[in-house]
Amino acid sequence: MKITTLFTLVCLCAATQCFSQEKLWTAADKQYTIDNLIRTRDAVVKETENLTPEQWAFRESPDRWSIGQIVEHLALWEIVWSRELSIGTRNKPQPELLKTTRPDSYYHEFIMEPNPHKAADISAPTGFIKGKDNLTFFLRGREQNLNFVRNSEADMRAIFELTATPDPRNMHQVLIYVWGHTDRHLRQILKVKSHESYPK
Image (cartoon, rainbow, N blue to C red):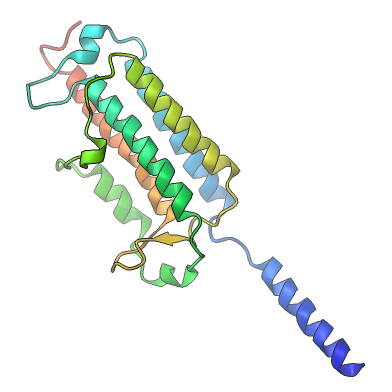
C-alpha cells in the first residue's frame, strides 16, 4: 500500500513539473512575429497595389530585377518558408541548444545587411507572372504562413533545424528571416521606384 501511494505521489509530482514548464516561445514572441508578418505584408501591398504594368515591369538595368520579379521572388520564398516551418516544427524540442545558438540579432543583421545576396535557384524569379498577379501570389503564401503561426502550439524557441551544423537555428529565428527577408526586398522596391527613369 505504501509503495503504491509513493508511486502515485512520484507520478503526480512528475506530471505537475511537466505541465508547469513554460514555453520558451512566449506570447510576446508570438505576437511580435505576427505583427511583423502583417506589417511587412501590408508594406508590400502599399508599395505595389496601384502600380501600372509599365511600373511593374521596369528594370533599372538588364541585370536588375523589376518590381514584378522582386515580388515573385518573395512569393516563391513564402512557399519555401511554409515547407520549412511545417517540417521544422515536427522536430523534437532541444532547448539545450539555446546555450550555443546565435542570438536573434545575428539573423536581423544578416538579413538586412547592405551587401547583395545571391538568390537560391529555387527562388529565382521566372518573370512569367505579370504585374499585379505577383502580389496575389505573394499574399496567398503570406496568409498561409500567418495562419500557421497564429494556430501553431509549437515552442518555436525550443525547436531547431540545421542541428547537424555548428550553427543550429530555432524556428523563431527562421520566422525572423520570413519577415526580415520581406523588409530587405521592400528596400529594393523603393530603390527601383526612386530611379530617374522609373515610369511616372
